[in-house]
Image 1: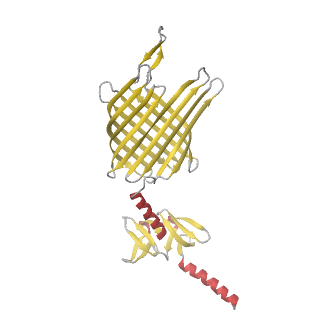
Image 2: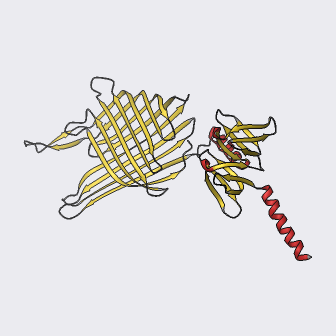
Image 3: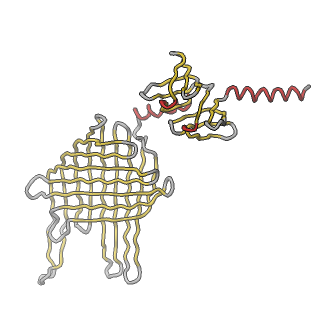
Length: 373
């Protein structure tokens, strides 16, 4: 009698668990039981006691039956909450306020359990009222080139970018350093030594329009540029903004400061053997106009580029522009291979100094964080 009671209790617990379980019926006739977690109308996720989370193609689902309330989002934005049953191509949601509501299966945009909906609502609330430390993500790019033998050179590049992005605003902090030497000659010759960076803040005041403020810094030893600083602001438009690509155009005005140190250059017809050029300080107002494009290809490759043109105010102020482009392919979630190109140009460099600096670098990219939008 005792063994029979145990058997009946075991069978009863299985039947009771099955009665409490959600059931998904596939088009091939298979039935899966467990707890429905979520669906995005492409994949349905179900959690079973023994198999864990199982992902099922939504097109393969013939019907579902849930004992727990589910949050069902329909095309057009309507949200229904309640236990779900289905028959044919129609799903019925037993709501507490409007009774049973029927909808075609192909109008369903999402399904969430109570726990998933609570997590989604918490994330939306966090997006609406984020803390300054929330939603930071970024990348660190490195590139190294070394030659030995008939030549002996080393060039190293290091670039970093951190972005905090929410539906309301975006903060970008960025920096690039380039250093190169030729130690095959005596004394060792510096072939590149530049550091540039800046901060930019964008604030959306509609779905299409935004305002921005930015300050950029640059120092270039070979150009005898001790410091260049441009502080600017303006407005822009999101030409398009999707999950896979964004394109912005922007324009504004600002203030430019350039400090060039004194330097000497060899004289082609000595004497004297060299010519001394005095230090130069330049300050002028400037306009700016530019664009920025970011895109994702598949799940592994990203591409980004931006171009900004700064025409100066005044006959002797000249103009300058910056162009940056990079592409990266993921090797792992946090590691990728990147290639970067940049071009910085000033139209009125000091005498004997070139106004154009180009950089082409390849190497590894390390990423961190998760974007807010």
